Image 1 (tube, rainbow, N blue to C red):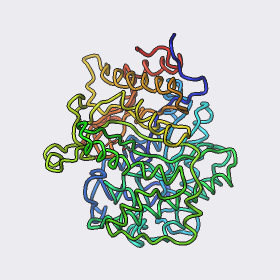
Image 2: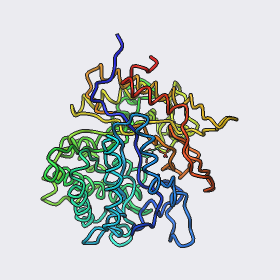
Image 3: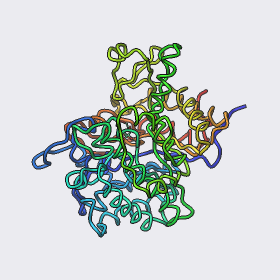
Image 4: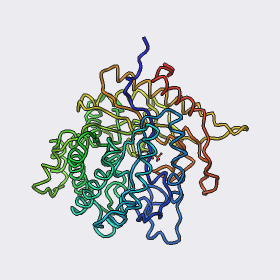
Length: 465
Ligand code: BG6
């Protein structure tokens, strides 16, 4: 018997403001951390944007072309689109008392357009960006005051869009701060582990406050967290490798543990003790943390391995997260190891751990697409990748895991986060934009566009098993 996805399953794609919108200085927008990182989240920030340009300044010009893009998403049958709000469009420096009306009006138009096409918005409050003013003038999330600024921003967003947006996420890949502190928590080079965890504490408190506010202001809304699902396997069955892997996974699970259980886990308290990390926790923080999320969302691209042998780690580490490669897996052009079954494992791990609904809000293959002589893009590699991952989602649903939906990453080509590359394409829709900024920005359908359209129309029955 064919297993198929439940009827209420949400199908769609996921975008982030700073990777698609462009219009980086339009309608009163302030400068964000992303604007100060023209070469991507793993580069050093520029000192000033004077005379410096970035491919993200225009990006794919979603700010002006969103009606056309949304109609293409609707043509594929999307029932959900994950987008993010650029905080710096609403509070340009982060610390204003009043929001920027022009910025809010644009998101009104965006949500209206989606709703007219029966596409539910799933909105991330902060996706890899914050107003640069909060970094420069306050030291980012290292400063408790930023909690208050975020609270004001979140309250403003829930109030303004309460009738349009019923699904929210707080911070994108909240665990990524450990690897990219400027992007995650607005901390500059030279910050210590203790600084990072203090900033993370403030962000976790802010996330809990946002959950509470959302429930108060929009009682029929659901709000989730967002984790980078960085599942790792032991490199061997040596007990030391197995235990080191358990600890390695806890580095990202810690965030989910706090956001789903409402308090710090014991293993983390031990880690802080043994590493001389003394967090400043205000008396009211416990209450804020106790506001747990309604569902868990996560990104999934790859898995990696862990070994207790530190010499071997140094020798083997490679990709952005410095994971040890798995000898049994193939890699993408960018060295991300492809592991569809790992998605089923991760879904089961998260379900067993939290028993909360799960939402896969990012998954996809970054590849260099080449139009053929007729101008068509036959991206069978992308179709295979997505097909294999979706089959594993279906298996997880059969395992009893509650999965709310699937939004593939970058349903239209966007600017990549790691290195601000447009040559790393994820989309079902091709955008005529080259790395040097040339191109018409015209949109065209790839082969995968029709494939995904079919998957959605048949609720997964067309997948090759
Ligand atoms: C996730 C981020 O880490 O991975 C996205 O939430 C990002 O913003 C995506 O784009 C893929 O990474 P990259 O570097 O290929 O864009």
